[in-house]
Amino acid sequence: MHTSFTDALSPLDGRYAVKLAEVRHIFSEAGLMRERVRVECAWFLALSAGPSGKALAELPLAARELLVSLSKDPEATDVPAIKQIESRTNHDVKAVEYWLRGELQSRGASPAQLEWMHFACTSEDINNLAYALMLKKARAALLLPMLENLGGKIDALAARHAGVGMLARTHGQTATPTTVGKELANVAARLEAQRAGLERVEILGKMNGAVGNFNAHVAALPRVDWPQFSAAFVESLGLKSNAYTTQIEPHDWIAEYCHALMRADTVLVDFSRDMWTYISMGYFKQRPVSGEVGSSTMPHKVNPIDFENAEGNLGLANALLSHFADKLPISRLQRDLTDSTVMRNVGVAIGHAVLSFKSLTAGLDKIELDQGRVAEDLDRAWEVLAEAVQTVMRAHGIPDAYDQLKSFSRGRRVDEGAMREFIASLALPPEDKARLMELTPGGYVGLAPRLALRGRSK
Image (tube, rainbow, N blue to C red; front, side, top):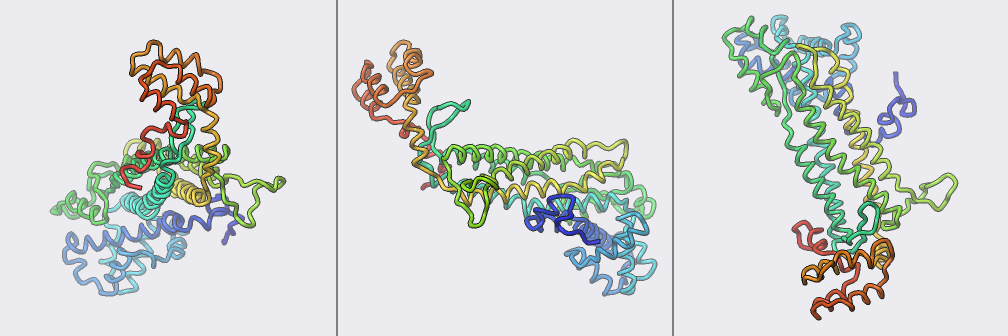
């Protein structure tokens, strides 16, 4: 039964469906079926190249070509046909096996040859590899490139505004100035580190039978070195072999994957909230989109909806990812089925993350720095120079430097005249006094302009 976007239960498949086609292709039911088909065909071909001996030596060319084609690219999988079989079997992996048997039989494979389909496998042998391939593909095709693109945009903004002085706020109060670029560079550096952490997670898989001991394999073909053969097969799929499992691969690597993505998401939650605040303060303006409405009653509004959407979806993603990391490595004794229904939702978490990355990208493409507004706040905060003055006083051994500046500046607004008058009263060497007299809040940014470039020249 066809369900329109407006009838979808999840907004990922409804309101946001048009933005998530790539995620849906990987993690949908059809995507899972395709990867199962890939694994079944690859396993059959691996068996035909060794353990099956002469049994598969005369496999018809048409059958072999189908297996090779689907093991490389399972897009031609007839998912509706598999689902029709599943309606009878009430078992999704068995439905894949039966569909492949039928396809091979129609291409001349004999009954004896068909018995090598799903040979010595438990369903989880197929499923764990299918999900590993899906998560690997999502990381390579979506998550890492999108995080790199976001980091690049933030880095470019950091370089553009490297020297633009900005009043910092610690505890929400005026604090030692920074630059707009340095604050953006902080985010880019954090995001780069977390992206690298996600990239380092090793993606594991197993192909070792009902409880991980190759029982059926050895019973049928005792002379085969099954651990070595299994490891080589898993690695041929671009995964790392896990030799020690129960019926299921224990999913510890999935927990690592989820935690790594959560950390990247958390950096972006922090960034989204800061950008929302800077927009609220007027530091960044948003370019209005023609035809877009900001409020149903206030015509003037241009709301920071992209940063709000990102924050909300990052939170949803992390809530799911946290559950996956907590739950998936736990399975009673040699296996229970609680991981099965949970694993079907991994694409939902990825979907919320991808949606947030797209929202942040859109938000960054709309903003412009209002340097006048940023400078206005700095010019009203001459009290932030108290740190510089008391530190220069300390360097020259003037007693109670901190307390003097505390009495002068704490809890009250200090203007330019008052600060200059205080500096003029100090017993400092002429050159240091002159340097302090020339200092302004906008110029008191330390090495922020250089740090904002992160080792690159302007």
